[in-house]
Image (cartoon, rainbow, N blue to C red; front, side):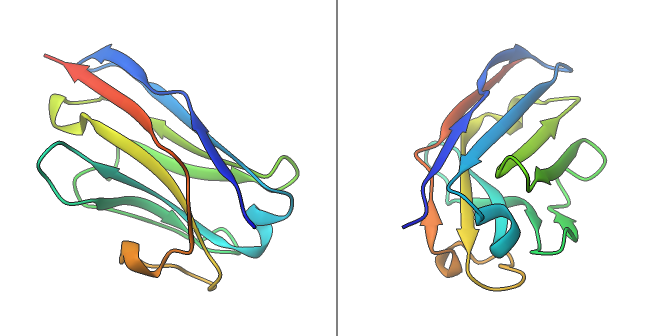
Length: 123
């Protein structure tokens, strides 16, 4: 059973930065593709950034150039560096893991999820 625990959320002003972390069970980051998703109140969950088993990355258009996804396989930790934050980035952010090589943008394909960490950006 894979366990994922997010941390690093908080409240910041527009233009600020946050770094989210997702601590995973042993070997998860090297054996699974992983991703960050977010869900704002009243909206559907959406993909933010995804990373393949071998480290290839992809980003939603809304965060390109501002967010960076990365992972440390030795520490089994996934990261999301978020810069130039905007009020529309406010959401609960979730870490997810998929058994496939590259999970893609469909949240339903991911096998494991964390509990989420709240990010609030004020204008």
